[in-house]
Length: 185
Image: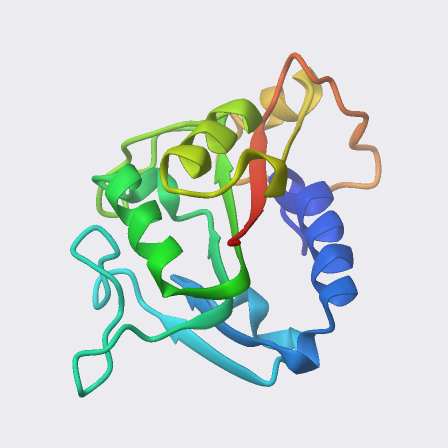
């Protein structure tokens, strides 16, 4: 079953990734395996506890930075202790023209796995990406949610599954999830 909190974000992201031509992309996904179904040229899942982007970029055996066309971070940046440093290190791991996609909850219960540190709106994500070195004109940021979804977010178990009667209308003043795509020069 689909998560109510992610249904709109995942659809828009699937459409965007498909438009990039996934078969041409070398991709890394930090924590999770949501992206493995896209048929990328290469796909590498990086577990957050084994690779901490706060500590530096991913290095190969020779000590050189490993580079990717797309790096994905789905629902992990809220757990990163030093998100500005981590985002700068992700920037270093992108090839010229490469993309960083990240999605984070905004209105969600505290969930310390292992810690819960941050929340961002679409504008907050854009600011984070600008401070990491991305050009403002190469960033798209979005947020989605409404009071109905926020109310369902208080249910246990969490996160709530999508139901046929759920209202998916966006209320820009009541985000539940935010996401952004930023392209490196």
